[in-house]
Amino acid sequence: MEYYHQNASVVYTDNKGRQIDTFVIFDTDRQTGLTHINHENLKVPADRLALHAKTVCQYHLPIDDAFSFEMIKKLRQKYADIDRKVRRKEAPKEMTKMLVLAKAS
Image (cartoon, rainbow, N blue to C red):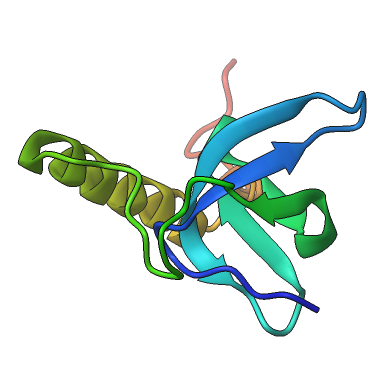
């Protein structure tokens, strides 16, 4: 199995056979084998990815200016925050019983 590193330029092949240029947000998870990519915030198996043909080396950054680097850094932080949030519904609170102080006459 091939593992992709953070910031690697990759080509993602979707279910319809379309190839989409994107980049890796987080490394490939060694337990699940899924790689978190920027395209639609997907986590995909490594066999759906290929290193981009114009990649110079393993740690090639798909950016060439400081602004893009900061944007990717903020995206990575956003996705990390989303992954950390626990998604669950709160149980409905129990209704408190009313005390009857006096009988109406």
